[in-house]
Image (tube, rainbow, N blue to C red; front, side, top):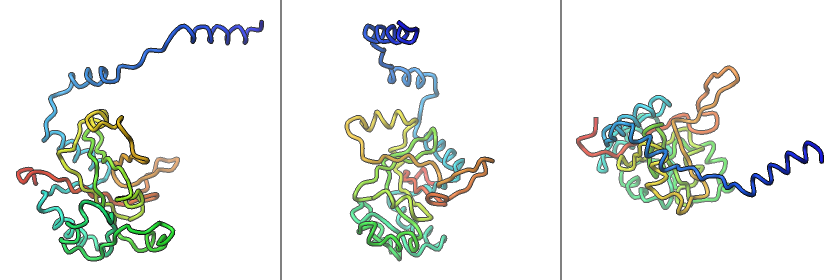
Length: 225
């Protein structure tokens, strides 16, 4: 028997008798969490805003009553004349009631209007499933109501995030939202506008996605700054 065969035989024998231990993921994060200060809503909001700013994303605090009006104001300030949104989004009615001009529902297969989508749309609006304070990250679950290209193609991405769905860490979002019960085809984690870098680590924004990310953070009236 060659040395190679001897090694392989020993590896196979070891593998057949020893079962690898499953990692205690929950225990690991529970220990880590115990060493951190007690999490509060205010702390999560402040940290999320800080981290999102680090990634060059903008956070605008709004309430459930004022966010459509604020979105209209932002569209006017940025010269947005066409705003893409999900045709069957739960927020479609609020967008229309706000009087935002140039609303375009995402209602056709991509091949039917590729030129218009890539050449004429100024901004896209999406909802979010939650946010991660530790990294300043949005959680998006694209589906037939809000397709992936809605947040990928337009130069500006407006995202509506409920502060009640801000989590300390990614693990907290995974466990509390029950991701193991069923994942979408495409789950997205978005931290700031799109960016890339060359070999000299020179950052360029908007190379493969929106140049701007503006988060409308839904908070209570007393939390608006």
